[in-house]
Length: 166
Image (cartoon, rainbow, N blue to C red):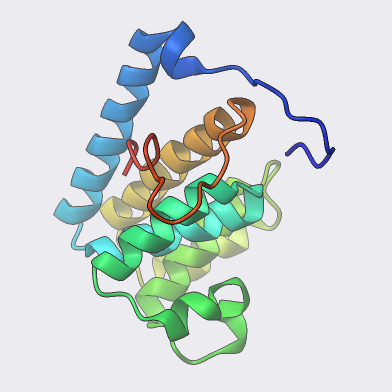
């Protein structure tokens, strides 16, 4: 993430390599489909997207996925404490397991992966764990693309160009 005062143009994968970008959109779509088929609702998918985007510092993806989570019925209370989810009782065992996996997989190299996966297997079956991995892989790719492309969070009413991976 660029924190300097200089504006940079960034590398726009969607413009320079549109076939690659479209393929990644397809990956994100298939990850959401796999999550649905594994029994996850859209709110859980968005919680994973948001938590990974928090960890990766992607403001544009956070903007997109917080709005999508609210649209899917997520509460502002839970969104407000998501970065400290371990310290609350607001998340179900299934959600906690998915968030634990998401954090482990979004940060490379993963720490204590065997322990995280063992805990998660108490609440998520193999298909659900794989679905979380698919969502994590897709959002982390879009975090990288968005940050590299220097996409900014636009003021209210000027949101063109965001949310295409959603």
